[in-house]
Image 1 (cartoon, chains in turn blue, cyan):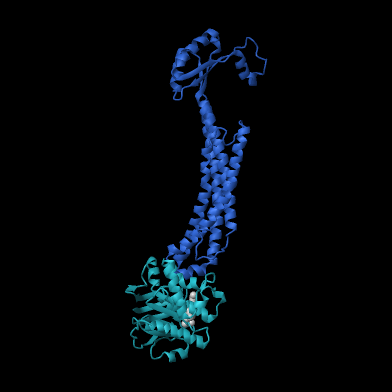
Image 2 (cartoon, rainbow over the protein chains, first blue to last red; image 1 turned 135 degrees about the horizontal axis):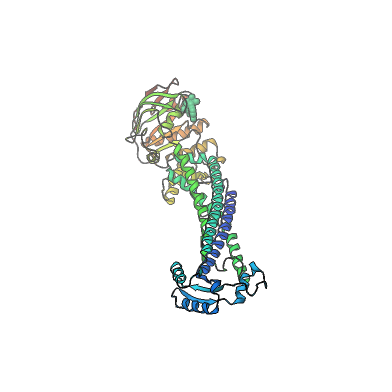
Length: 287
Length: 233
Ligand SMILES: Nc1ncnc2c1ncn2[C@@H]1O[C@H](COP(=O)(O)OP(=O)(O)O)[C@@H](O)[C@H]1O
Ligand SMILES: [Mg+2]
């Protein structure tokens, strides 16, 4: 309201409808961003954890505790490895249970020895693998590279999906804003012409409409941003009780959500720019 | 002050309304623009207040050929020309005072100075008590007074009025004409479109005539001596 022009009528077409439509668009865009940031944040954290974990599998042929101890000693000397721990038979059976079933493991079925390792942050996995393979023929180093590739794909997928949804929302918003602004200017053609004829510059006339539409845009933006903030806050509170769910605050720092400022700001600026362009286009047709 | 050379005027997609216009109006002169309805009076005035450009020819005002000036250069020039439009062009959502002050508002004059000028001018035209009214509540004569006040508030060197007495009773018309003639006595170049024969007779001593013959528009011009501007009231 503080932005209202003193020259334009107090009530103009779209004064109510436009902020509402903008608010709905900002709300939808905000929710989309909220979901995208949460999913990407969780995937990032998860792949960050997974990236540091790997496992070493000893060939069943050389299946003996002695060999495992030797390999463990070797791993302890590796600077790239922070921690190494052999899984006992029970743990390995647990791991295999989904494939073999519980309690079905026959005693003489060769069960691989598995050693979990935690890699140093800048570990060179390829070099480590080469060294271990040279030292222990048949050894398998599994560094979850597949997983990494998968999470990268998930990230991209989320980016593209969220991006497309937001583009559609922006497109719908632009159409609505352009439509309302044009209708509004048709209503006020007499005003625009009169200002033009008494010596207003195009910039001055455009500014009057820009202010008005920026005002509408800000109102719509705020109206849409409030429920988005409420939802974000509510989910973050829920995260305190449901630490396992993918929720803001559960591993995704709340600062990641500052990007939620963008939809209302973009909506307000877009509204203002649309009005400016529409007014200047009309004025350009005049002498 | 105003030099029109070989000017053709037309509307987009329409025939040429006025052809081969040639005339000059001296600074400080006073002319009636006459011709029957449809002869092209409004069309010529619109060209003079830069609403549209000639198809051909040159119009010189303030030392510029306004036919070829770029779009961006026109607002500054328009502010030096006061116009009383045939249909007033008042803004119904603004008060009388806001309407009269509009040319100063768009020119970026400080509100205090603007409001002082507006008050003075409204007293001059005799509408001091209507400054807070809105145009739809005004009579035709009052609207015309507001339009005249708005036309002159920026101290224009040229005032163009399109049938300013067309819709009002003759006693009010006389008052409006007196206001406009007073501007001319203070040195403003004045062109008034009219087909009111009484006006022509009443002001025959002071005003020249530009006549549009209605057949494509040869201008016949007669001039009255340019008045020496009085100063003071
Ligand atoms: N906006 C317009 N578009 C096309 N033709 C117009 C327009 N305005 C006026 N005319 C035509 O131009 C001619 C002159 O009109 P106008 O200048 O309004 O005459 P006057 O003011 O002397 O009555 C008329 O034939 C009229 O029909
Ligand atoms: Mg006319």
